[in-house]
Image (cartoon, rainbow over all chains, first blue to last red; front, side, top):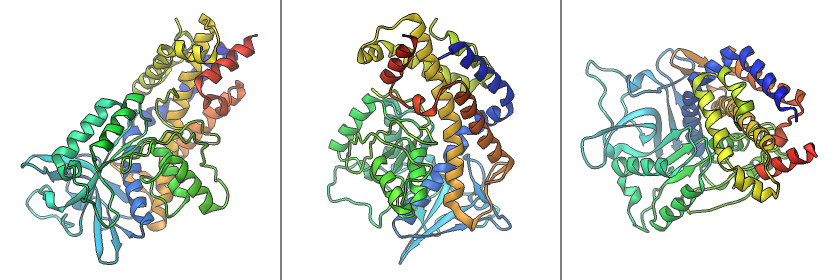
Length: 283
Length: 139
């Protein structure tokens, strides 16, 4: 390996592609939030829901809300319908806390149908009533380290505390997604230990690490949720759906740590076109 | 010293990406003793420099790759119901300028790495194997 030559070539590459790299630099987080919404859509499709996209009047593209500002009616949402069960998915929705009148903004909100106004009035939009929030997902472009888990748990505690109760009988029906932490990075070893503890404490949350890989696999198989199962299972399901592994496939070390309701998997050594996105030191 | 080769190109990257690449390279540098032990290879200064360079390249490739594939898969999953995804003032769709830009970025980076004899498959190997490869090449 000629390290000097490689270093020079990458320097030249970075100079030549400065515009694209600047764009990436500015949009990395937004791209992940788009991926989070699409991943939740795919979860509901995988469980037999029909999904339809509701755009604001006159819009022909899916408008993603990426900040706390703005009226929900100005942005797209997704309606998920299965028999008599109907829910909606909204991006960056403000919601009242589960304990008090604190207002929290969640990246993807899964809410009861009709709970979010689709037209604007003269009054500013009000945060969603907590009772109308079914579940939610948060997206981070980070490696999953202990303090990130603690922060996510804090959000669940404030917004949907019922998911942290030690109630064996409690289950979220209709195949709804439990509160989910979506991350581009892998789990640190310490974070993995903490997830085992979460399982023992019967927390009903989903940790979806290496989410771009999960999304990639579920994109190939229409009945696969990117939140359910190991990455290996997702990829196998994806390959089965298409007959042969497609060009998005990965080889995966099935180092599965199935924590029942808490998904912890480790993907390694992707073989073909794609690569996991964040720091992962495989030991 | 082990960031010698990385520091030669990192200043050309935008700040946030540069920090991501450097942080990752430093984390591999910090773990280099364990990597060396597992690979059963004595770590020289030059080997360490090369290992850290591979880590930085791996991270840069991962950043470009994941962004492209997130967008690719998002547009694929939303299907034909919409013309694209609008974020702020930007619409992403397959065939849009931004999408093509990301595709070109990833394709060109992979071409540069291939030209340098650095395969994507090699980048994706566990670090002890990469270290073994580098050591064997030198011997």
